[in-house]
Image (cartoon, rainbow, N blue to C red; front, side):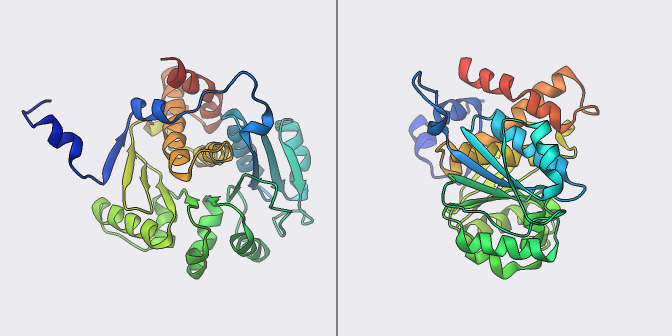
Length: 297
């Protein structure tokens, strides 16, 4: 409510905390032109999946495609080939020589964005693959799930992450890479310091997901609900952010737009179902409605 503060003061005061609302998103989102083709919307590489966790690769891949990426290649172990080709015919596959886990990298130079983590496990060879990726990636990385857990076991690798990379941990994963905190305020302070020190964007998932930036600013999301606290929801977010970065959004805008769209799709899902029955696939199914709600209204 207005309390009589001067408008100029409000507009010019220096702040480091921002609340993401629809007007912010409408100023970021790009509208497709009539003569666009798939090459205009980037080629993403998703490194994902292992024995027993191929669902993570499916969810992240489907979310990536549904958010508008032009081309997607998903690097998976051999056992996942039939699963991915059947579940998502729109995705291309790059097959690892290992049957059950990730053990190698493909050519990285042809991709506009690279993401790793959903369902990859923490096998020793997979850890070595992540290290090689950090050393050789030509673009900032989108890092989630088991890739963050691997970094938690190899903290010295964090300082070598490509500048402007994006990490998307939940609170326990954040604890593994940044250390224990005793309350939300201390955790937010440590989160900002982590982003500043390592020159990365950190998306700390939860109610009002917090995005810390290398300049110390922090953006809090306004969409989302408790029903999204379900298996696979984070894999969906990874796919969304990976897609947006491939399409030419900056790391910062990919994070801001990604968490907002993700939460809005979750809100639409909860309206149709309930918090208790919401699953990650429903978030993907409602990405279309979320995007239309932003663009058309």
